Length: 266
Image (cartoon, rainbow, N blue to C red; front, side, top):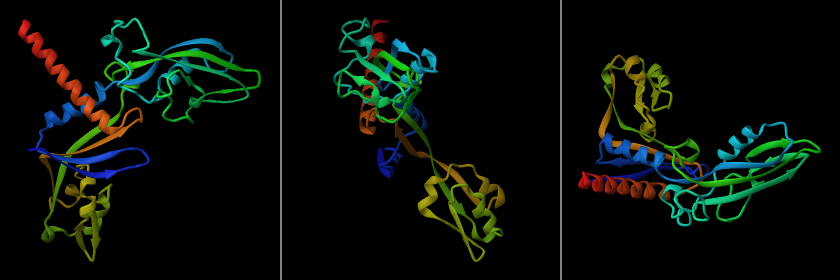
């Protein structure tokens, strides 16, 4: 039976860390890969320049535009390959954004004007270019849904996991408590009066480097729990974490259904 427990939430970055029990490494990695590779988000794919007298080449600006995270509405847009237009381009799979700025000043992501108010830059203060007096930047960009397996600009965030660490200390064999405590880069241990103590609230921060095991000469044991994993998800802002997880599950089920159909026809 699978059990999930929230360990940490960061309101600033949106990062969430949770403990999940009752799964194996295969399932854990499948979940990670599905979120990174299959969950579609909106990003700029094509840029048509009308004017560019800035110090940056068209290609550099286009690259910067492509990496700007855009808020994504999965209910209103389709992946081009699954759209009724069959990828030719329509309002259901593409969105136009325009930019027209004259110097002097810095061109920010907020200067992009979207035809859909739901699709806009997640971080308005991302700089695109610096214009001097008399310089101008005018362009039309086309954004569309894509997947991380095509290009990292279509990844919705970062996802990583590790086995839950199990740490035990043999007090009778510890002769260098201070050195053991200082060897841990994430401060899992504390030392007082020559005794080593495990700081339980920091235990899950252990990333299994096992430097403490080496310094203690085996008095400290650090093992992986094969059935418990600590997951971290940090979104770029295009989608919420719940949208990322639910969409990943939907995409995975669609892949299984597609495989089932192909096997039936084989």
